[in-house]
Length: 546
Image (cartoon, rainbow, N blue to C red; front, side):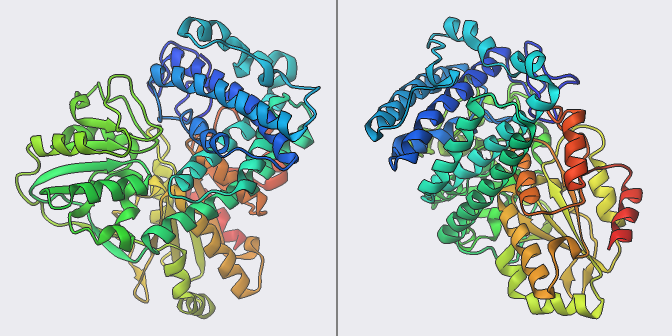
């Protein structure tokens, strides 16, 4: 096992029996094998697509398989044994398609022909061939770091793509481009300029994928509306839905309707309460708990059933609530019941069997629903406030939260922002400060919750629209970025921002270990990336540049 993909990684990388996230060495090695095989799938799928042929099953399996390898998603070795077998099958399917298309298959990279076996013992023996450190001595930290920037960016893009796909939004051109970049990675490229160029191509692809996801969510559930979300429990049976998948939440709401179960969102699901198609269910009663890293405390205290729909799962065995937590979609933990075919009956029956909340807690609410449609719906008001000087600065403060020291930076920065500024926030990073009363400007709350990390497209569209209305470039806006980095979705969003030419992004608090000093130097030099420092000093630098 060797893993450097997230902020939880031990210094120098997780090279132990169990990583900081709870992932075992067995699972980590299987994930490496799966990704290496998926690059091989893409080699054939790309060459077939160049000749005009694509396979729907291959294109559907690809983002799901990649998604399972993200941080805190799937920890179940049995599931990966099955996924690897499927990947081998999909590679043969893609190969047959390439042959049918008349593609040139005379020069194939290793992932297209590699056979790691299918049994646990065979996979364990084959894993070193898929490990990223295999290439460190040969290619050096700069090249391997740039390849990892693409690899982890593709992981994040795949996650967003899978969220869109399960809601019915997918695009052949997106699948073809994903396969192209993945096939490029399969060649173990060593040209630094080409690697950096392909990193930005991942950013461009992710922008389109996030646009599809935005269309999927708003097309199915309507545009988010400004909504005061209850953050305190109500009396009654209880079911908690965590993760990001709005489709699973809708299914749960439909299947619990009339059964006397109150449904709560958790973590990144909080913004779901603002969608008309979801908040119409009166038994969606609010949000319980905060960001993902506090889930063991939150889940332990929750007197009902819990469903994890996507990433952010933490070891459920430590606090002993494993008898009432269920996984769905790409999520897995060995021994936990997994929801099949979107039938949440086991979780609902569990919720009914548990005591639930005995009484209403004092009501506490926070606002959400400030997505692009809402903000741009009052664009004249916002632009007028900027023109009059009532709003002098905009801040985008958000991203993935985490448990390591230093994340109070984002709270401290938000609290220190001038009263004549607005804060756009998204992702679970907002839980650092969204409970604080930062006041308003002319009745507009200073903290505007744009949504999940999945809603980064909304924040980008707001910035582009404001810049366009003011007749300036995005980098000429008094808009300052403080992005809390944690895992691979954040990598994809960062690459999208760089693709769009956004500069002066303050990134932290702990930079990913795959960003070697050499690679970080490239990003600082070319894109003016700024590792976070002291909140007050960074704020002064931001305001000085405005």
